[in-house]
Length: 82
Image (cartoon, rainbow, N blue to C red; front, side, top):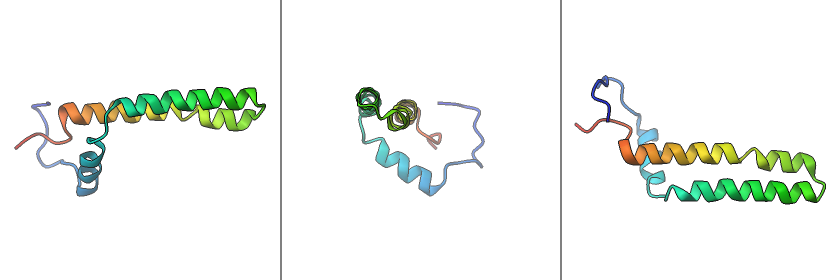
């Protein structure tokens, strides 16, 4: 947890509510979603649906980023404990 944070700058109620709900999800869900999007993309590519395969394949990175965000929020929290 960072010790040099500004107490005047804290998360809003929407961000806190989202983080409380997403913290309930295991982080590996995002990893599996990423792998599933890559698998679906590969399947679509073999089916000749190139544009759809590219679209679905691009979901992998956002899923991994969401998983990383989820993990950081679980470990560090969004605001320092008061």
